Image (cartoon, rainbow, N blue to C red; front, side, top):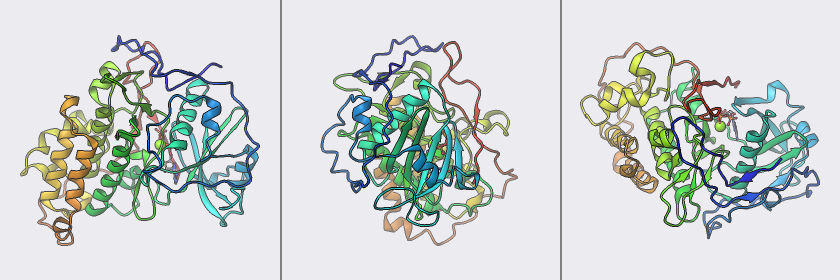
Length: 420
Ligand SMILES: Nc1ncnc2c1ncn2[C@@H]1O[C@H](COP(=O)(O)OP(=O)(O)OP(=O)(O)O)[C@@H](O)[C@H]1O
Ligand SMILES: [Mg+2]
């Protein structure tokens, strides 16, 4: 099957009349099974410095798969590492497949006995044909080259017959989505929410900076993974795209992403810029403030869409408490919450150009963490509101904005059940 990496599919939605150009099309060689892995492999430590120049694009499939940073695993190795993909090793499920916990030897990267060696997360893609392969390869391409403390580390992959797997560092606290919306875990404190926002903003700023120039395109709570100390790392680079180059202002592309997070102008026109990610960041910031999902079909009317519901309160100091997460029980600094809400509002500006850059978003959030603010954190603030009746939010409905040619990009939601 022919395949293009770094190219975009034709926009073929009702809303978009743009003809997509391929920003550096590379013909990808036919799929090859690469199970002849070296027995040892060194993963370079995270470094922003290592990306001293822009990512070389485009690369052929062969080039992508021979990245020196990535270990090619055989299917048998990953079967052993996950105890034959046993259900009790299941960490979660997303739209593209299941994620299992596995163990590998930290030196040789061969399968290790459960409980010994290094823990990894193994994502096993459902056989999804062309789109699945393209996104799998895009992820290998980007994570094979980009290294940063706020991006999840890809250790290796497996491409064997129809099997496509990805092996990541294990993130012990799972996704932000689990913590924010699911019953059970301790509610996240204000300080942890801001820490997560800052980590995620660092990851996005790194992607957007002049060296990388990557648009992430799928920024959402389920793609923000958390380590043991709640350091945030972005995962899922299957939709990432090279940003516009030269005097181009945007790239035109098929509308992909997740309902509720995607920027309105991108959904309407397929024109993608780094500011589309900034919008999605604003949505996640709102989720952190409110504890509500971007889209919640269990609610009625305007409350189904978090942005529509929350926007009128964001710029009003006296009304802001109405949208704040009741699970915080008032334990947040009013000034800090107002600053974060104002920032969210700026990120959610319908005019993409007026949204701040991620570097500015990060600077504002870092100010919130500055000592003078954090000193005030332990003191409970005045309980500003009466506890509202709030049902625990149901599972999130998510959709890939990846419609069949004639459908609206905002088609029905994709249910993604998960197991933890
Ligand atoms: N590296 C990892 N370490 C620990 N858990 C992980 C890791 N990667 C994924 N998971 C778990 O698996 C779940 C599913 O992840 P996955 O990326 O497949 O789907 P998703 O992000 O929920 O949805 P989507 O398919 O839309 O991206 C995550 O929510 C998380 O709980
Ligand atoms: Mg994901």
